[in-house]
Image (tube, rainbow, N blue to C red; front, side, top):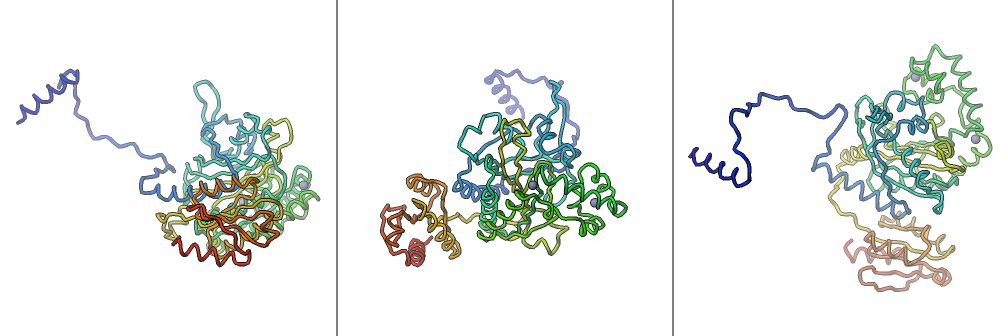
Length: 460
Ligand SMILES: [Zn+2]
Ligand SMILES: [Zn+2]
């Protein structure tokens, strides 16, 4: 039997053009130690992918309806990019970056956050020539040499959104709405902490007041904060050490030193947030650990954060960065605002809640509109439908009806509600079955009952 096996092997080897191996040169392999994952790194195994797909699908649905375009930037960038943007005195750049010198002698880093790369791309590809704002998103791995702990790994992934080229506080409102819609869709209850860190005009004065106060209390601060006092005093405000929190409780608050423009801007953001029912609470000590933020900063936390704050991590965060694009080399002022949402952290929450991620998302109704008056009315209708539990979509920023219907089709909506100027005058609305293409006019007052009836009938 063995002979036949050997003969077969020789035949196959000959057929394949291989020379029979000389047995004497095959060394018997001793026991080898397997090479394992690097500390803080993680594989995403096949059985995990369903969660990733679930989060991405929900995110893409929302982002598409808000007109965001995808961009991918490299994981490796010139280290100088992060030094100039994230800031050389931040924890990230000081101790958390994976940095090395490549063979050509260039100092390079794995990206610790998504914004700098996207801003670099915006400048490098002349995106200021496009209609502003440019709305971009990416889903990307990020690298930080942190002490691995719950919900933190050295490579993690973020959904990152950037709105570049718009200074209006409505941008913040839109980002907060997107965050709310996304976490709503994922079944995660959130609270958004929000603050203003002022601008280049008003922050220096505040920092001076803060440093003066902290110096008086220097002995009560932790060792790290004593150092921060000279390098990055704002960071003392969000130190998690108990003794520092006690000092900070009586520190001057930045909201009291904002210049008029910053004050108006922040008030507007909060007004929009109220109007849009964003679950938020002002947090006077929120500063975020990056150098480039101006005016609005925010963090998204699980709603139950109050119960065990030490065990929770933020789900995401972001803010405005009106000076960064200029600081990185743009010729003109380009105000911008963005946010990053942690995918692993969302998945931890989804698992905790035992959400059924295999359930296919059903899209019920898309609200399309044409003309200013119709848009106002459609906005109200959108909210009403949402509150009634109808899965509803819109794209109020797209002008053409055709474009809106195409989008509704692409996103798999079964019905479309169409409001034009004539319908507003007649107090009616068109209801279109996207499957049959049949379109009917109904009285506006009946729209909610009618749509619910149809959803039920279509067994959606
Ligand atoms: Zn200011
Ligand atoms: Zn401290």
